[in-house]
Image (tube, rainbow, N blue to C red; front, side, top):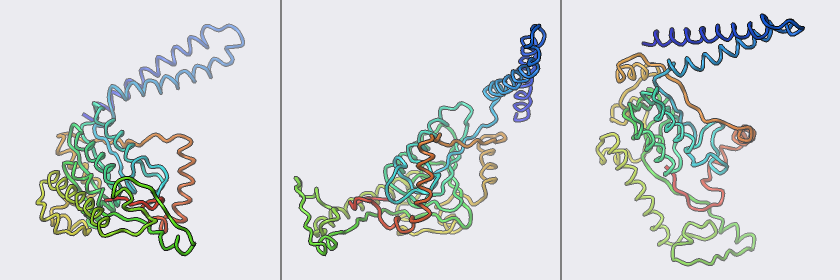
Length: 332
């Protein structure tokens, strides 16, 4: 089937290119009787090249060169990929971009399968779930695989796929939730400053960096974390047909791929080539994969360059803080 598609694409491209060359010769070489004849050959060649490109586009749509689509989830998982802390690794896409790419693949009649490449330590709760839901909604086999890290929010996403593959040295797991904040009350006291906030509602100020947590506030915020944790366990248990108690027994630890496979956290160990072999089994035909990436404008490229410098210079320090405002934030 793939050989037939290749031959079909080549035939269409050659026919369209030949027709373009004939038209170019007639328009710029055969008919002109003036000095335009001097440039006729060059113009004819230009038209032929344009025709070949146009023919290639037609051939691509008639005989697609792929039947599987790959989408990558790399770096910290954030809503829009904008500023903020922790700083994203340069080149990583936002959750909204990833969801859009998966939906684009689902709408593509040529995409019979989805490959989700996961290399992420996790991130924000709801954006992670958005990607999971998009993967689960894909109409066809969905196989996730990780090379280096599939932890926390990354594992949450994997639970929406039919299978999860990893390497023996991959880091997998971290089924847990954390919440943190900066505390600046001591700094304000040393600076001789006082913080005063007018609020309505007993817990509206809970988590503010400018005041100490009361026991009630701490219990309130811990309750939210516990609820997120239960949601995490239930989501993974349902998506991967796993025992919730087994997941709780991991106590949010990470495991190397081999141990994760033994525990049932990973379906198979293998390379990227092994994943394609598995897709061929699922589809019953040879697999050709194309990778979808979000389009990046000039402004985003310029911002990405600045982020790259900042990331290289200070990401290790900046990643210690979850939120530049210091307010309480929940993360997977």
